Image (cartoon, rainbow over all chains, first blue to last red; front, side):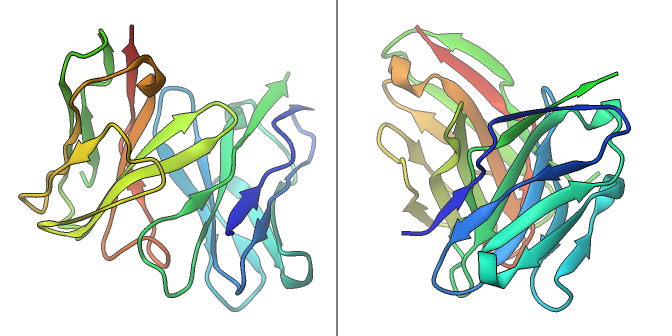
Amino acid sequence: AQSVTQPDIHITVSEGASLELRCNYSYGATPYLFWYVQSPGQGLQLLLKYFSGDTLVQGIKGFEAEFKRSQSSFNLRKPSVHWSDAAEYFCAVGPRGGYNKLIFGAGTRLAVHP
Amino acid sequence: EAQVTQNPRYLITVTGKKLTVTCSQNMNHEYMSWYRQDPGLGLRQIYYSMNVEVTDKGDVPEGYKVSRKEKRNFPLILESPSPNQTSLYFCASSLFGAGANVLTFGAGSRLTVL
């Protein structure tokens, strides 16, 4: 069955520290890959996506993610976290050839200490 | 402004009292979908619609109904709400399907069923 795993439920980092949020997927073929962010009281906003090509993708707000086929992973990174990055982050996959839904991970809640 | 609008944003109701959560998009998108978000479970798809008059079940459709009479609107109907439907609900849309297309999300509707 298709699934997305975000192993870290909560992560706390200090402002200015680097960040890596993990995402692993289980699927027969490389799916489309997404990271969304949900700020408190708001809907989900797309941070970045991977469809094909360069495995290191750049997104908004200084985020980047790297697709590693051998590890079925799509980890999100940011070199220096800002207090405004505190939010919940969701990894999602969209099956190639399937158009009915995205499959979301359980989310990682990020707290940022001053 | 391109957006997905959900109403109401917050609702407290009682078991068995029918309610409708409206969803409207102004981007001429073909695809619309409803998700529910629960702690530790991420977002799970309730129903989706690939086009007007075409709807289908997602992963957790029990207790919900939808209709798609116009391209822009996709209401979620709870005929007889129960406490296990207490959740945060999101409507989303995209140009054609979910997979290779980015979803645009509404701000969410927090529903409490007593």
